[in-house]
Image (cartoon, rainbow, N blue to C red):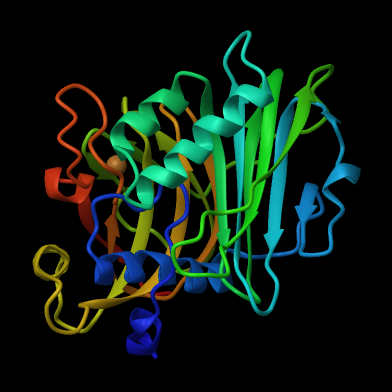
Length: 305
Ligand SMILES: [Cu+2]
């Protein structure tokens, strides 16, 4: 099955997939698919759910601050992404959209992804990021601060090489905090350039709180390693893209800006896993290298029950 997944090639979503080769890209994209099974649950506190039939103009334009869940369900024949941006002071939603489209073009080979990412980050932070393969769903919970937000929904382009059709919706977050933030089972830190995962993470349903404590964008693709495979094998495979992959996609934590954290309901089986960040080095010297080349690849274990 993994080979079938890997053979599929689709256009990358926004910021997710920069300097990767085709196979790596396909792997990262197919990760979204499996992520769903482990990460999806019905939520009582879901504030916003977007499905293929959602009338985007009917989504709430105002939300209370505090713990909020966003859910994305994709169509059976086409996946989709849902990203939440918090606008910097004085920036409007109308200004953000062209910057996002510039990123799309850069990833399609018409521009410099690092420049395009940094330009967009001048306008907004990435608060949450969902990606659901065809017929799948994914959800994330975040603590919203007051401010002006843009929720951007984009079905995957139907044609190879086409750019996503973005449907941004403005949301104002303000007023009294209405919700409580639950305690997390597992806390994970992402920094430049490493993952800090606690030892002894339990199997089964676990609420992971993943924080970006670095100065660059990060995300986390989780692979379940094949018997006997290691993070070294994963790195070697990512660098060469030769032979079968050393593991299967198991979960996905979306892109987030520095200082943000997001909750994902995981449901991993006991075994050895590797966490990988594909974001390009986009600050300082901005080599554009994927973060896994700079150390952001970490093996970890899910303990038996
Ligand atoms: Cu990273």
